[in-house]
Image (cartoon, rainbow, N blue to C red; front, side, top):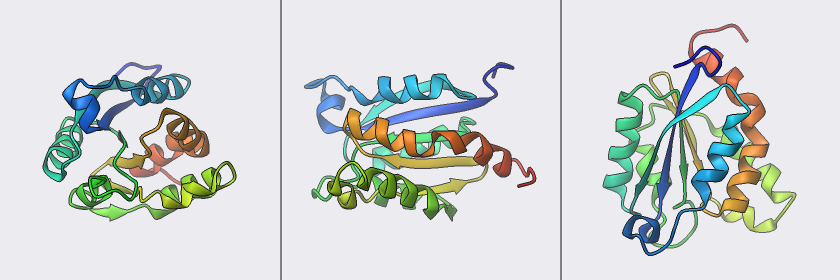
Length: 162
């Protein structure tokens, strides 16, 4: 951790095609760019397939590795392979539903299809985990909805006053 970027972030891309090398991931660069202007330093980007166990293991590793913020991208839709919220539920200790609600509410002003996102958010220890959609456009819009409040969330997780 550096003084100018006091919070550590991990990005987990959930995509069978990116994991197999069939397609390059385009969401992680958007996430990294959005976080650059904040108090977060992206320390790791991982790509995992659309399966509960690899997602769960990646989330646990990020939390155990000391990440303050863990952002997933992908696997939040309605297809049978979209299991990121289910995997995330096995790791989080406390829900933070307002974050996912804010993302969907903001995104609904752009496209009604945002209602189809099943992303969740929650806390494990002192780590905040947030599921984001898989498309680069939707990832950017989702972060626009919440990025301004993430530093305050970190202060609260550390026991700070509201």
